[in-house]
Length: 242
Image (cartoon, rainbow, N blue to C red):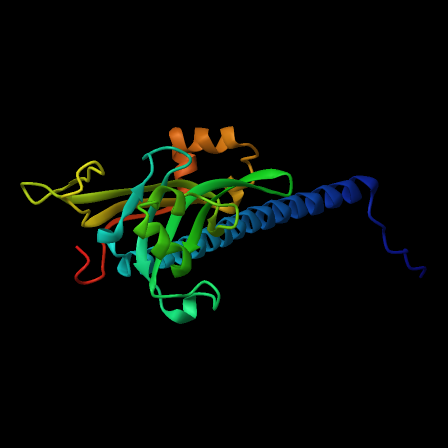
């Protein structure tokens, strides 16, 4: 008896098998793409929170060493160039050999735009004025010029959406109220502050200063999810300085 050769797949069966395989591949690609996007968002959130923690730690450490009776120079709240300058005590190891004549220094925080790979990156800058500059400026009452922003100031956070720092004092009901720089008889007791940092997926969409200004002014719910922020009221910490 002659055996019948095994039957091969028909053209229809081959087409159906290819379509089923393509469906599986497309589903898998979509799943991997969604998972990769979620991982990217998670990593972006971690990076932004790390950036924020570093900036807040530096900021709080400076406020803890502040000497407000020596002088405080506030900026304009809500502006892109918001800043706050004040005097603080710095250990010898935190100053250069040439710039150290004592422990009283000045520091200024402000927001500044920098160009990174052809795009605008908004940064929180910190500028330390060592004691060799601070003592003469204090003696000459030249605080504004000493604590003015400089090109040599260094960034402590990138992708900064908002930086607000307002010196405050206790009001009649125990509440915090804005300190008036025009009244020399009253020294500020604390700083009400807020720092917000954009996650990388949001920051890369902002190419110009106008983009950053628009984001700081009005944000939607989707933007809120892509921003890490922290706020508080921190007292000037050096004992005997108030």
